[in-house]
Length: 385
Ligand code: GLC
Image 1: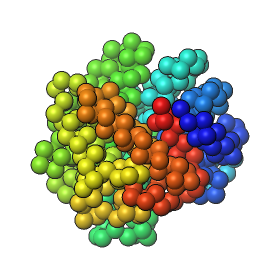
Image 2 (image 1 turned 120 degrees about the horizontal axis):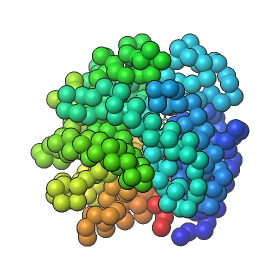
Image 3 (image 1 turned 45 degrees about the vertical axis):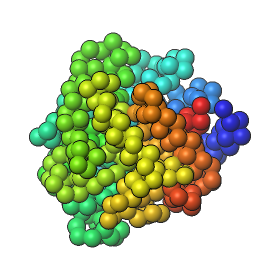
């Protein structure tokens, strides 16, 4: 355990701590609360022994949950209503992000932290909203209603639905338009989007993983069964020729097949026997320097993809929070799979440090990308074991 790494991570988190109890991802680029970022911050604070902050941030992140169980992905906790017209509601966004909160709850509990019952119930309700109310794709995957819900905002996985060639401004406008076509519950919770009905492998994998972990922790058989069913549907999306899991819906024959790191997250819910060969194939992709592997962590897009653009936001570099989730998915695997997980963690931690805690970085030389320092990059503390 590297004490300098821990000290430096704690400093980043301290500098970006905000009232009433959350860490902003970056003081200037991202001054507000983002849902999945806060879940990662909470787990790092727990690992650093800062129990109070860990609980406060997770509570804050789930604090704006509505009666349907929907959790908005952005909160303007200074009560600013500057974004009200954009989202159609004051103080929060009107879409969500991957439900890492369920795994965070279990991580905190496993570190001996006592959590308020209300927090645990919010995490459970958040999962049921996604499992039961959110529309499923024909193959049973959980749909997202907007690229921002994936957290992987400009991933080439969305290309087919965003216009012609990738262009930052065109995408931004299209993302604005996509907010208008979301179908909502009477209470306003986002349920489906005819203009973006993507059954996302990555989002479904994080949902199933959270449901399985929380379900097992609570002894909630229904939650575990729902997770197992979704896990089965996910593994049916494995495409041996491409060595990736394919999204369901309108992108399934096109951009939904682009080989990305986030699409490999199905390994989070692999069955140890049934899915053994697929997990081994995923590990070998992540360890292959012609595919994803790099000296500073895995690339986010396979190096052989025409869309692979080193250094470009969500089109190539290494992203620490994905690295953590991939490591989780592989570290308990047999022999070589666990060794790959170890190498992935070591190289990602190296990238986090060499990039100066950048939001993302080039897998080959750690050139920093995006905001710096970025709070979620402190997940290196979790991978440095
Ligand atoms: C970017 C990322 C998103 C993250 C946010 C704050 O928008 O794509 O996943 O939550 O920044 O860090």
